[in-house]
Length: 251
Ligand code: FPP
Image (cartoon, rainbow, N blue to C red; front, top):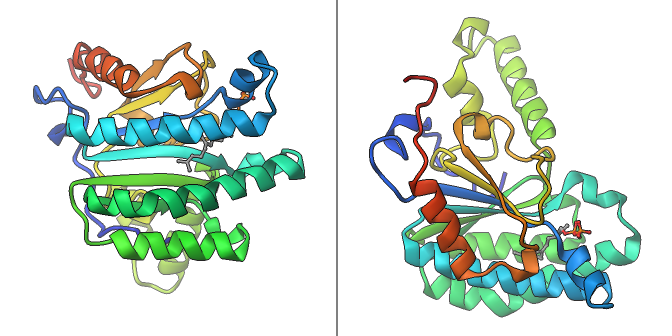
């Protein structure tokens, strides 16, 4: 995985729980681009374009609020089932977005990492993504994780396979496989523990997104469609999070 950080096992008790009101790691399922466009009689591509604009605003707002890591679900492994024209629109948008935004992300000290397998994308897009990851690798103000061709079950299957290979090679014993060992094999290894998952557009599902990582995360479902989401909407979500009491299974 490109941009995978060092294998530091996440420490849930270090974030959220101890009176820290700003979530260390926020993940967003950016849903509703199609409905936003449909409501305006526009093509779906227009919804995705407006969605990319919303992402730009939310990335800035998250950095300003002091969120350490923001994860955006931009393309799921199930999105390949969409019509070819929509997939190619999304690839075009990714090209455009990286081209237009990379400089300012870099200037703002944002480190880009990728979750999922973007190698399956058109070669030029994959190369642009790799270049953006490499260029921003030393930045430390905020980490922006973009999930591209990501699916949580595939991530867990890959982790299980790698651990099985290591056990077979006698590098580890089956008894060594614990939470930390699994976490170290996930695409999110080294990222802060996930505190808050936001899904827009009124759907109440995780849709194969960060299933392991969301074990103790707060879930927030908002009705607003993603293209209408912005800095104020993020700040509202953060304030809702600050009002929740997290117990991590304790009491
Ligand atoms: C869900 O809306 C959105 C997507 C499948 C794509 C998300 C992509 C972007 C917001 C743009 C790219 C962003 C970055 C950061 C480069 P939908 O099409 O499923 O909407 P619907 O449920 O209303 O049809």
